[in-house]
Amino acid sequence: MNRPFTFTAADITAICNLILVVAAVGALLWNGIKKANAPNKRQDEKIEEIEKKVGRHDEEFKKIKGYLENDKKRLDEIESEIRITNRVIIKTLQVLVRHGIDGNNKQELVDADTDLNEYLLNGRVGHEGKSPKDFERGEG
Image 1 (tube, rainbow, N blue to C red):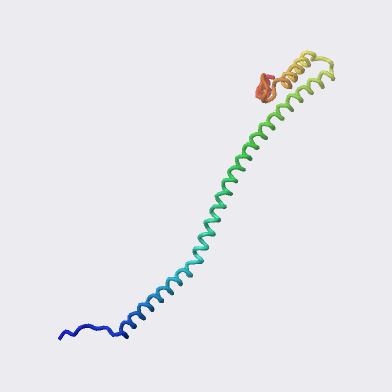
Image 2 (spheres, rainbow, N blue to C red; image 1 turned 45 degrees about the horizontal axis):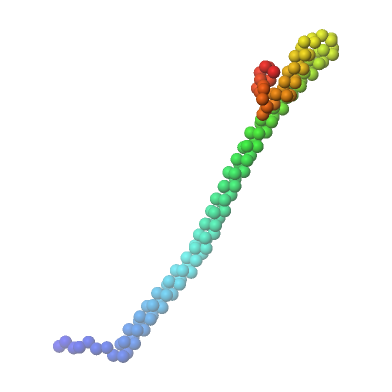
């Protein structure tokens, strides 16, 4: 009743052919998936490269922004010093004009000369003595 199970050469060949067909179909599917994903992989590589470039640009931008902020601060300081210098010069010129008109106010002329010399010698930013703020307040 039980018959022994036997394989013939044709059966073995058919099984081998089936295995080969399944392997070939698997290889075709694998290659198809790789080809289908290839554009995404290239795109991901390009995106990563662009992100690196943007990161470097952001670093450079921050660096340049710092330079610009420092330049603006220094220019504001220079502008402030120029305003103070102009005030001292204008005050001195006013005293000279008044003295030239009537020949009086000699003490005012001496005081203006003292203030001007004090400012020119000691009042500028970075020098000892009075600061430009003293001249802005009229203390110079």
